[in-house]
Length: 380
Image (cartoon, rainbow, N blue to C red):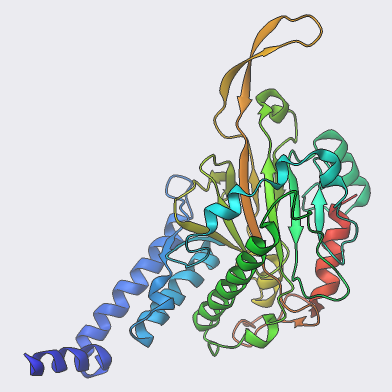
């Protein structure tokens, strides 16, 4: 029995002693990745891969860790998105993050915490103030905001030890425990960001800790999002959406959805949008613009948007006449986005394993200049 176990361990630890086994394993892995590349070419087979991240976090071998890293990088190459399960974020406290009643506060208390500066990127953002878009034209964004504002409100939270840019917390008596819960969640999201970036490094054939010193300062943004219930007809106007089509700015975004849905991801090949249906217990993780630049577009920063999920009929009474009518209502939606960024002093330039035959596509850029510039364009 002991001898059999020892033989099994040696067999899987040193597959090169059995070339036919190593060849079969490599063929199966290559076939799996090739199938994803084929699936994304058609809207009928387009999918966002689901990856068990525990195989990386608690890997029993370097081979298993590398296989999981390759799955994640393949998803980011072909789709730009992945579902991660068994990720350890929250671990019993995620529902607590969703349940905090910040958005139920009176409007004047929320407005007292208003977002003020793109360099800080902290505080409350009321409905209509932000208009996410790919445009960088101030006039065009202003027109979009007037015609079709994003129907959401948010609360933005950054690293709490910053001596220059301070978080804007509600009073403890208004939302008890809010600060402690959010800071704990912020830290667990950062820790997961580090692990996913280590997987990306391995998948791009870089040393596993390659990104560690470039993301350790935690210049991230935790965004609590509330999409209120709304008349469906308002979301059917030209150009209207709960959040317009856009890409994210940093390295990765970790998105936690409720069951309502509405997130859609663009197929990079056909340009059609597909639902990113909520899967309980998973994080939706997507590549941001800076990571795409870092990888010389090897990894995709894919357009996505939030649209109206299925509606329901509700009876409303006119405050003027008392007359009743039936309207189609899109239900309230809540989500949490953790926008991961490199250190603000980090220079993002083409990774050595992503140069390719044509060389770098982008000039090096300072993280702070890029992020602050995009935020300045987006907000009023």
